[in-house]
Image (cartoon, rainbow, N blue to C red; front, side):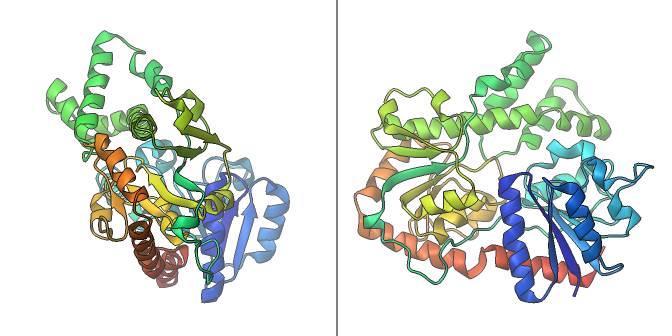
Length: 394
Protein backbone atom coordinates (compact mmCIF):
# COMPACT_ATOMS: atom_id res chain seq x y z
CA UNK A 1 0.00 0.00 0.00
CA UNK A 2 1.03 3.57 -0.64
CA UNK A 3 2.67 5.65 2.08
CA UNK A 4 0.67 8.83 2.67
CA UNK A 5 1.82 12.24 3.87
CA UNK A 6 -0.60 14.72 5.49
CA UNK A 7 -0.20 18.23 6.89
CA UNK A 8 -0.98 19.76 10.26
CA UNK A 9 0.23 22.83 12.13
CA UNK A 10 -1.40 25.58 10.05
CA UNK A 11 -5.20 25.85 9.69
CA UNK A 12 -6.45 24.02 12.78
CA UNK A 13 -9.62 22.54 11.28
CA UNK A 14 -7.81 21.22 8.22
CA UNK A 15 -5.13 19.69 10.41
CA UNK A 16 -7.88 17.99 12.39
CA UNK A 17 -9.49 16.65 9.20
CA UNK A 18 -6.08 15.35 8.13
CA UNK A 19 -5.58 13.52 11.42
CA UNK A 20 -9.00 11.89 11.14
CA UNK A 21 -8.26 10.64 7.61
CA UNK A 22 -4.73 9.59 8.60
CA UNK A 23 -6.05 7.47 11.48
CA UNK A 24 -8.54 5.80 9.15
CA UNK A 25 -5.83 5.18 6.55
CA UNK A 26 -3.70 3.50 9.22
CA UNK A 27 -6.63 1.24 10.03
CA UNK A 28 -6.80 0.28 6.35
CA UNK A 29 -3.08 -0.52 6.37
CA UNK A 30 -1.28 2.55 5.04
CA UNK A 31 1.86 4.02 6.60
CA UNK A 32 1.16 7.71 7.28
CA UNK A 33 3.23 10.76 8.15
CA UNK A 34 1.90 14.04 9.53
CA UNK A 35 4.11 16.93 8.44
CA UNK A 36 4.01 19.77 10.99
CA UNK A 37 3.95 23.05 9.05
CA UNK A 38 4.82 24.97 12.21
CA UNK A 39 8.15 23.04 12.35
CA UNK A 40 9.09 22.77 8.67
CA UNK A 41 12.79 22.03 8.86
CA UNK A 42 12.57 19.21 11.41
CA UNK A 43 9.48 17.86 9.65
CA UNK A 44 11.29 17.82 6.31
CA UNK A 45 14.08 15.76 7.83
CA UNK A 46 11.55 13.27 9.23
CA UNK A 47 9.72 13.18 5.90
CA UNK A 48 12.82 12.06 4.00
CA UNK A 49 13.20 9.17 6.43
CA UNK A 50 9.53 8.27 5.74
CA UNK A 51 9.65 8.79 1.96
CA UNK A 52 9.79 5.77 -0.34
CA UNK A 53 10.38 6.53 -4.01
CA UNK A 54 7.48 5.47 -6.21
CA UNK A 55 5.32 4.54 -3.23
CA UNK A 56 4.54 7.84 -1.48
CA UNK A 57 1.63 10.21 -2.07
CA UNK A 58 0.45 13.50 -0.57
CA UNK A 59 -3.09 14.16 0.68
CA UNK A 60 -3.57 17.82 1.55
CA UNK A 61 -6.23 20.47 2.04
CA UNK A 62 -6.47 23.87 0.33
CA UNK A 63 -3.08 23.79 -1.40
CA UNK A 64 -0.98 23.26 1.72
CA UNK A 65 2.49 22.39 0.50
CA UNK A 66 1.95 24.02 -2.88
CA UNK A 67 1.31 27.66 -2.00
CA UNK A 68 4.85 28.87 -2.47
CA UNK A 69 6.29 27.70 0.87
CA UNK A 70 10.05 28.08 0.47
CA UNK A 71 10.85 24.82 2.26
CA UNK A 72 9.02 22.90 -0.49
CA UNK A 73 10.92 24.58 -3.35
CA UNK A 74 14.37 23.84 -4.75
CA UNK A 75 16.83 26.50 -5.93
CA UNK A 76 15.04 26.62 -9.29
CA UNK A 77 11.61 27.14 -7.75
CA UNK A 78 10.48 23.60 -8.51
CA UNK A 79 8.13 21.97 -5.99
CA UNK A 80 9.34 19.00 -3.97
CA UNK A 81 6.41 16.93 -5.26
CA UNK A 82 7.63 17.33 -8.85
CA UNK A 83 11.26 16.71 -7.94
CA UNK A 84 10.36 13.49 -6.10
CA UNK A 85 7.51 12.49 -8.45
CA UNK A 86 4.96 12.41 -5.62
CA UNK A 87 1.27 12.40 -6.65
CA UNK A 88 -0.82 14.94 -4.73
CA UNK A 89 -4.51 14.68 -3.84
CA UNK A 90 -5.67 18.15 -2.84
CA UNK A 91 -9.06 18.41 -1.09
CA UNK A 92 -10.29 21.97 -1.63
CA UNK A 93 -12.82 22.99 1.01
CA UNK A 94 -13.60 26.41 -0.51
CA UNK A 95 -14.82 27.53 -3.91
CA UNK A 96 -12.10 27.26 -6.59
CA UNK A 97 -12.56 30.97 -7.40
CA UNK A 98 -10.42 31.67 -4.31
CA UNK A 99 -7.48 29.71 -5.70
CA UNK A 100 -6.93 30.66 -9.33
CA UNK A 101 -3.38 31.80 -8.54
CA UNK A 102 -2.52 28.33 -7.19
CA UNK A 103 -4.44 26.44 -9.87
CA UNK A 104 -2.29 28.09 -12.55
CA UNK A 105 0.83 26.33 -11.20
CA UNK A 106 -0.11 22.99 -9.67
CA UNK A 107 2.36 20.08 -9.52
CA UNK A 108 2.60 17.74 -12.49
CA UNK A 109 0.83 14.79 -10.86
CA UNK A 110 -1.97 16.75 -9.22
CA UNK A 111 -5.53 15.61 -8.41
CA UNK A 112 -8.13 18.23 -7.51
CA UNK A 113 -10.86 16.98 -5.17
CA UNK A 114 -13.98 19.12 -4.66
CA UNK A 115 -16.43 19.03 -1.75
CA UNK A 116 -19.28 20.43 -3.86
CA UNK A 117 -20.44 19.20 -7.26
CA UNK A 118 -20.81 22.77 -8.51
CA UNK A 119 -17.13 23.27 -7.71
CA UNK A 120 -16.46 20.22 -9.87
CA UNK A 121 -18.38 21.83 -12.73
CA UNK A 122 -16.48 25.08 -12.27
CA UNK A 123 -13.16 23.22 -12.48
CA UNK A 124 -14.28 21.30 -15.55
CA UNK A 125 -15.22 24.54 -17.27
CA UNK A 126 -12.34 26.84 -16.34
CA UNK A 127 -9.51 24.38 -15.60
CA UNK A 128 -10.25 21.39 -17.87
CA UNK A 129 -6.57 20.46 -18.03
CA UNK A 130 -6.51 19.58 -14.31
CA UNK A 131 -7.31 16.05 -13.16
CA UNK A 132 -10.43 16.13 -11.00
CA UNK A 133 -12.41 13.93 -8.67
CA UNK A 134 -13.90 12.18 -6.99
CA UNK A 135 -16.52 14.49 -5.44
CA UNK A 136 -15.83 14.14 -1.71
CA UNK A 137 -18.24 15.94 0.63
CA UNK A 138 -17.01 16.95 4.06
CA UNK A 139 -17.65 14.50 6.88
CA UNK A 140 -18.03 14.41 10.64
CA UNK A 141 -16.37 13.05 13.77
CA UNK A 142 -17.98 11.25 16.70
CA UNK A 143 -16.12 12.52 19.76
CA UNK A 144 -16.95 9.58 22.01
CA UNK A 145 -17.42 6.54 19.75
CA UNK A 146 -19.11 3.48 21.20
CA UNK A 147 -20.59 5.55 24.03
CA UNK A 148 -24.16 6.79 24.28
CA UNK A 149 -24.74 10.46 23.56
CA UNK A 150 -26.30 12.49 26.36
CA UNK A 151 -30.12 12.59 26.01
CA UNK A 152 -31.57 15.76 24.50
CA UNK A 153 -33.50 16.58 27.67
CA UNK A 154 -30.27 16.69 29.69
CA UNK A 155 -28.36 18.97 27.36
CA UNK A 156 -27.19 22.44 28.32
CA UNK A 157 -27.63 24.54 25.16
CA UNK A 158 -31.01 24.99 23.51
CA UNK A 159 -29.49 26.27 20.25
CA UNK A 160 -25.81 26.62 19.45
CA UNK A 161 -23.91 27.83 16.43
CA UNK A 162 -20.28 26.99 15.68
CA UNK A 163 -18.55 29.39 13.30
CA UNK A 164 -17.27 32.91 12.96
CA UNK A 165 -19.14 36.05 11.95
CA UNK A 166 -17.83 38.98 9.93
CA UNK A 167 -19.85 42.17 9.48
CA UNK A 168 -20.83 42.50 5.79
CA UNK A 169 -19.68 46.13 5.81
CA UNK A 170 -16.14 44.72 5.95
CA UNK A 171 -16.47 43.90 2.25
CA UNK A 172 -18.09 47.17 1.16
CA UNK A 173 -14.71 48.70 0.29
CA UNK A 174 -14.41 46.11 -2.49
CA UNK A 175 -17.93 46.83 -3.72
CA UNK A 176 -17.48 50.61 -3.83
CA UNK A 177 -13.80 50.80 -4.79
CA UNK A 178 -14.26 51.88 -8.44
CA UNK A 179 -17.29 54.08 -9.12
CA UNK A 180 -21.07 54.29 -8.70
CA UNK A 181 -21.73 52.22 -11.82
CA UNK A 182 -19.63 49.31 -10.58
CA UNK A 183 -21.12 49.65 -7.10
CA UNK A 184 -24.63 49.31 -8.52
CA UNK A 185 -23.47 46.36 -10.63
CA UNK A 186 -22.06 44.49 -7.63
CA UNK A 187 -25.08 45.21 -5.45
CA UNK A 188 -27.26 43.95 -8.28
CA UNK A 189 -25.52 40.58 -8.04
CA UNK A 190 -25.84 40.57 -4.26
CA UNK A 191 -29.57 41.36 -4.44
CA UNK A 192 -30.05 38.57 -6.99
CA UNK A 193 -28.28 36.03 -4.76
CA UNK A 194 -30.24 37.10 -1.69
CA UNK A 195 -33.53 36.78 -3.58
CA UNK A 196 -32.50 33.48 -5.21
CA UNK A 197 -30.32 31.67 -2.67
CA UNK A 198 -30.40 28.42 -4.64
CA UNK A 199 -28.19 30.01 -7.32
CA UNK A 200 -24.40 29.94 -7.26
CA UNK A 201 -22.21 33.04 -7.30
CA UNK A 202 -20.74 32.07 -10.67
CA UNK A 203 -24.18 31.53 -12.17
CA UNK A 204 -25.44 34.94 -11.05
CA UNK A 205 -22.19 36.69 -11.97
CA UNK A 206 -22.21 35.33 -15.51
CA UNK A 207 -25.86 36.28 -16.02
CA UNK A 208 -25.23 39.85 -14.87
CA UNK A 209 -22.08 40.20 -16.95
CA UNK A 210 -23.86 39.02 -20.09
CA UNK A 211 -26.78 41.32 -19.36
CA UNK A 212 -24.38 44.24 -18.96
CA UNK A 213 -21.80 43.49 -21.65
CA UNK A 214 -23.32 40.98 -24.03
CA UNK A 215 -21.14 38.02 -24.93
CA UNK A 216 -18.12 37.64 -22.61
CA UNK A 217 -15.03 35.71 -23.78
CA UNK A 218 -14.40 32.63 -21.66
CA UNK A 219 -10.93 33.71 -20.55
CA UNK A 220 -12.24 37.11 -19.50
CA UNK A 221 -15.06 35.45 -17.59
CA UNK A 222 -12.54 33.21 -15.83
CA UNK A 223 -10.49 36.23 -14.70
CA UNK A 224 -13.60 38.03 -13.50
CA UNK A 225 -14.70 35.08 -11.35
CA UNK A 226 -11.42 35.17 -9.43
CA UNK A 227 -12.09 38.83 -8.59
CA UNK A 228 -15.56 38.25 -7.12
CA UNK A 229 -14.77 36.38 -3.90
CA UNK A 230 -15.99 39.37 -1.88
CA UNK A 231 -19.49 38.80 -3.30
CA UNK A 232 -19.46 35.26 -1.91
CA UNK A 233 -18.27 36.48 1.50
CA UNK A 234 -20.71 39.39 1.65
CA UNK A 235 -23.74 37.19 0.95
CA UNK A 236 -22.51 34.36 3.17
CA UNK A 237 -22.08 36.53 6.27
CA UNK A 238 -25.18 38.62 5.61
CA UNK A 239 -27.39 35.53 5.71
CA UNK A 240 -25.48 33.94 8.61
CA UNK A 241 -26.09 37.09 10.64
CA UNK A 242 -29.76 37.42 9.66
CA UNK A 243 -30.51 33.82 10.59
CA UNK A 244 -29.05 34.21 14.08
CA UNK A 245 -30.78 37.60 14.46
CA UNK A 246 -34.11 36.02 13.53
CA UNK A 247 -33.82 33.51 16.34
CA UNK A 248 -32.49 35.73 19.11
CA UNK A 249 -34.90 38.58 18.38
CA UNK A 250 -37.78 36.10 18.64
CA UNK A 251 -36.70 35.19 22.16
CA UNK A 252 -34.65 32.04 21.47
CA UNK A 253 -31.28 31.91 23.19
CA UNK A 254 -28.43 31.07 20.82
CA UNK A 255 -24.95 30.27 22.10
CA UNK A 256 -22.40 31.23 19.43
CA UNK A 257 -18.90 29.74 19.48
CA UNK A 258 -16.65 31.78 17.24
CA UNK A 259 -15.20 35.21 16.60
CA UNK A 260 -16.98 38.37 15.51
CA UNK A 261 -20.45 37.80 16.95
CA UNK A 262 -20.15 40.86 19.19
CA UNK A 263 -20.48 42.87 15.95
CA UNK A 264 -23.93 41.47 15.14
CA UNK A 265 -26.66 44.01 15.98
CA UNK A 266 -29.73 42.47 17.62
CA UNK A 267 -32.84 43.96 19.18
CA UNK A 268 -32.61 41.38 21.95
CA UNK A 269 -28.90 40.95 22.38
CA UNK A 270 -29.50 39.31 25.76
CA UNK A 271 -30.43 36.16 23.80
CA UNK A 272 -27.15 36.10 21.88
CA UNK A 273 -24.75 34.34 24.23
CA UNK A 274 -21.14 35.00 23.20
CA UNK A 275 -18.82 32.08 23.88
CA UNK A 276 -15.14 31.45 23.22
CA UNK A 277 -13.69 30.47 19.88
CA UNK A 278 -12.76 26.79 20.12
CA UNK A 279 -10.62 24.27 18.32
CA UNK A 280 -12.17 21.26 16.59
CA UNK A 281 -12.25 19.04 19.67
CA UNK A 282 -13.65 21.89 21.76
CA UNK A 283 -16.47 22.38 19.26
CA UNK A 284 -17.30 18.68 19.32
CA UNK A 285 -17.45 18.75 23.13
CA UNK A 286 -19.96 21.60 22.99
CA UNK A 287 -22.02 19.79 20.35
CA UNK A 288 -22.34 16.95 22.85
CA UNK A 289 -24.17 19.45 25.08
CA UNK A 290 -26.44 20.95 22.41
CA UNK A 291 -30.09 20.21 21.80
CA UNK A 292 -30.16 22.00 18.44
CA UNK A 293 -27.07 22.70 16.35
CA UNK A 294 -27.67 25.51 13.87
CA UNK A 295 -25.93 25.30 10.51
CA UNK A 296 -25.86 27.90 7.74
CA UNK A 297 -24.28 26.52 4.60
CA UNK A 298 -21.35 28.63 3.25
CA UNK A 299 -22.96 28.94 -0.19
CA UNK A 300 -22.29 25.30 -1.10
CA UNK A 301 -25.30 24.57 -3.31
CA UNK A 302 -24.45 20.95 -4.13
CA UNK A 303 -22.37 19.77 -1.20
CA UNK A 304 -22.32 19.50 2.59
CA UNK A 305 -20.56 21.02 5.58
CA UNK A 306 -18.87 19.13 8.41
CA UNK A 307 -21.09 20.97 10.94
CA UNK A 308 -24.03 18.87 9.75
CA UNK A 309 -22.41 15.50 10.34
CA UNK A 310 -20.54 16.62 13.47
CA UNK A 311 -23.89 17.68 14.95
CA UNK A 312 -25.54 14.36 14.13
CA UNK A 313 -22.67 12.19 15.30
CA UNK A 314 -22.60 13.94 18.66
CA UNK A 315 -26.31 13.65 19.35
CA UNK A 316 -27.72 17.09 18.48
CA UNK A 317 -30.61 17.89 16.17
CA UNK A 318 -29.12 19.52 13.08
CA UNK A 319 -31.12 22.59 12.00
CA UNK A 320 -29.81 23.52 8.56
CA UNK A 321 -30.55 24.96 5.17
CA UNK A 322 -30.16 22.48 2.33
CA UNK A 323 -28.42 21.90 -1.00
CA UNK A 324 -28.96 19.63 -3.99
CA UNK A 325 -26.65 17.05 -2.40
CA UNK A 326 -28.29 17.33 1.03
CA UNK A 327 -31.75 17.01 -0.54
CA UNK A 328 -30.69 13.52 -1.57
CA UNK A 329 -29.58 12.33 1.88
CA UNK A 330 -31.45 14.34 4.55
CA UNK A 331 -35.11 14.01 5.47
CA UNK A 332 -36.79 16.97 7.12
CA UNK A 333 -38.33 16.23 10.53
CA UNK A 334 -36.96 12.68 10.36
CA UNK A 335 -33.16 12.87 10.73
CA UNK A 336 -32.73 16.65 10.59
CA UNK A 337 -34.71 19.88 10.59
CA UNK A 338 -34.46 21.88 7.38
CA UNK A 339 -35.29 25.54 6.87
CA UNK A 340 -35.40 27.62 3.70
CA UNK A 341 -33.15 30.61 3.10
CA UNK A 342 -36.13 32.22 1.36
CA UNK A 343 -38.24 31.94 4.52
CA UNK A 344 -35.88 32.54 7.42
CA UNK A 345 -38.73 34.31 9.23
CA UNK A 346 -40.09 30.81 9.93
CA UNK A 347 -36.97 29.77 11.84
CA UNK A 348 -38.24 30.79 15.32
CA UNK A 349 -41.36 28.71 14.81
CA UNK A 350 -39.32 25.71 13.65
CA UNK A 351 -36.88 25.94 16.55
CA UNK A 352 -39.64 26.69 19.05
CA UNK A 353 -41.64 23.59 18.10
CA UNK A 354 -38.55 21.44 18.41
CA UNK A 355 -37.62 22.81 21.83
CA UNK A 356 -41.17 22.30 23.06
CA UNK A 357 -41.05 18.59 22.21
CA UNK A 358 -37.91 16.94 23.63
CA UNK A 359 -39.19 13.48 22.75
CA UNK A 360 -39.52 14.42 19.08
CA UNK A 361 -36.09 16.05 19.14
CA UNK A 362 -34.63 12.84 20.56
CA UNK A 363 -36.15 10.82 17.73
CA UNK A 364 -34.69 13.18 15.12
CA UNK A 365 -31.30 13.21 16.83
CA UNK A 366 -31.20 9.41 17.00
CA UNK A 367 -32.12 9.08 13.31
CA UNK A 368 -29.53 11.71 12.38
CA UNK A 369 -26.87 9.84 14.33
CA UNK A 370 -27.61 6.62 12.47
CA UNK A 371 -27.57 8.41 9.11
CA UNK A 372 -24.20 10.08 9.70
CA UNK A 373 -22.65 7.00 11.28
CA UNK A 374 -23.66 4.84 8.31
CA UNK A 375 -21.94 6.88 5.62
CA UNK A 376 -20.62 10.31 6.57
CA UNK A 377 -17.59 9.92 8.83
CA UNK A 378 -14.00 10.69 7.85
CA UNK A 379 -13.40 6.94 7.81
CA UNK A 380 -15.93 6.67 4.96
CA UNK A 381 -14.15 9.45 3.05
CA UNK A 382 -10.80 7.77 3.71
CA UNK A 383 -12.17 4.62 2.07
CA UNK A 384 -12.92 6.59 -1.09
CA UNK A 385 -9.45 8.15 -1.05
CA UNK A 386 -7.85 4.74 -0.50
CA UNK A 387 -9.55 3.40 -3.64
CA UNK A 388 -8.40 6.43 -5.66
CA UNK A 389 -4.82 6.35 -4.39
CA UNK A 390 -4.33 2.64 -4.85
CA UNK A 391 -5.81 2.72 -8.36
CA UNK A 392 -3.15 5.21 -9.39
CA UNK A 393 -5.57 6.81 -11.86
CA UNK A 394 -4.61 10.17 -13.33
